[in-house]
Amino acid sequence: MTIELHWVVMEKQQLIIYKGYKMIVKKIIIQKKNLVNSISFLWLFLIPVVSHSMLQKNNRFIEAGTSNAILIETFGEIQTDTYEITQSGVYLLSQDFLFAPLTSGPAIHIKTNNVKLDLNKRIVAQVTSTPDVVGILVDSGLSGIEIKNGNIVNIMGTGIQIQDGVSILNMHDISFKDCTICAVDLAGTGSGDFVETGTGGTIHSGILKNIYMSMCATDDAATSPFDLKRIDNFMMDNIVINKCGNIDSPIKLARFLQATECQLIGLKLVDNIGSSLYGFDLETCEDLIFAGCRIVNNDAYAAEEDFIGIRLSENSKSNIFKSCLILNNISKNGNLIGLSLEDNSEANFFHRFKVIENEGDSVIGCKIAGTGLPSNSFNNMFEKNYILRNKALVGDITGYLISNADGGVFKNCIVGYNSAEFGVATGILFEFGTGGDNWAIRKCEIFKNIGNTSANSFGIDLQTGSDNFFVQNVVFENGTLSANQMNGVPAGSITTVNPTNLNTATAPWTNIVITP
Picture 1 (cartoon, helix red, strand yellow):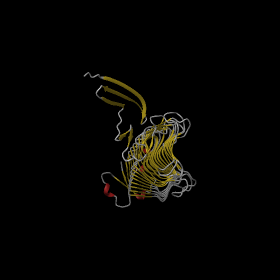
Picture 2 (cartoon, one colour):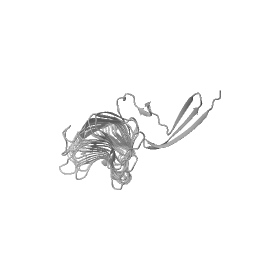
Picture 3 (cartoon, one colour):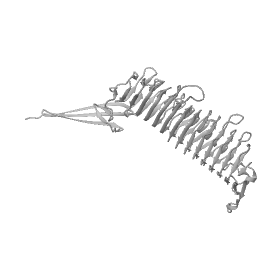
Picture 4 (cartoon, one colour):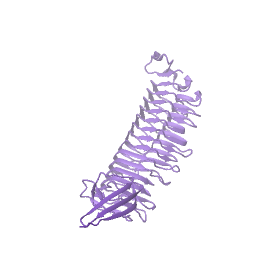
């Protein structure tokens, strides 16, 4: 019997977008056919290779445990219309959602309560340049919304927008890239200084976890990649903002407006840029807890504009910052402030807060300042904080600046190895004409803060203030002048000792100045 063999080679090549990257998918199908049987082989070449720990069914990647989900299917076609979710249930994105809107609007629009949207490790991407687009929009007043497990890329607007009055919100394991205006916008509304918890337009009770934002808020009109307005009772964990902003526009990397009773763990702001740049910006916020947050390697570019790592303003009070780090940031042509408390910011607590190795034209590790008389930033506490190895390239450098602020506490804080090439270096400064009253500075170490001359190097400089309590502080080698170690502090509270004979201080409450 004669067997006839036939080899058929078919090649198909397609350009797709995956997680913001263009890739070539090449299918080569080689079929060997004969009169007896038919055998087919399929090779799929994906450059770069992307693996999925998924179950495969009918050419769709489906996660285990979602067999009852409503599938959002695109059949490989670019979508021009919004996908609207109007019934409660579990929704699964079975294929990438490539959106080409003719006008502004959302790619996916959630319009009802109790919706779980599983992006299934797929992408929601805009493939046109139409402005004011939203990747996923959640309507006002909804409850029981979960969005998880996917990628929002190339949106000419906002990645996910949650409108006012939403409650019980869960967003986790989502990556945002190239969302030009904002990645995450929680757009609560209302009026007054504070909205009562869970009422009005407040977005109430939610979890944000494992959120990554990259190259977002790059448009000149953008103000923040992570904009949280009028929220309460949120838990946030492991949120990263990376390479966002542009050098020509001011940016607030994480903006909190009238937020209350939230806990934020492990937020990281890394390698971002702006003309001016604020890391965490809190306006009228109360009872927020930040723990283990990092602000690292960010740059502000514009002349006479500021870099501020963390800013509290407009009556922000009773907030706690624990083990937060501001490291290696640069204000290329302006001022750098690690922490700024302004405008009636009161009763905030900072523990193991670190401002280390930052540079600017002038530098302030921590600024506590009111804006009127009588003073109106008061009763803030700083314990075991470190301001170390920062550098002012043009002007002055100050560890702590107190200006029109009363009634705070520094305890076990360290200010050292800070330098000003052409200006004055001071560990703790009570500013001339404003200063502050009723402060307690206890068991702090202030050393090796070096200005351009010894005359411009100070440990503690009390220019204006009264009823301040200095106790058991150790101050040394801030320049070479003994008088500059604790300038303006009553002489009776200071014991000056030779460094080889430190045990001669007999008064238990005295401050120690070590002679050069």
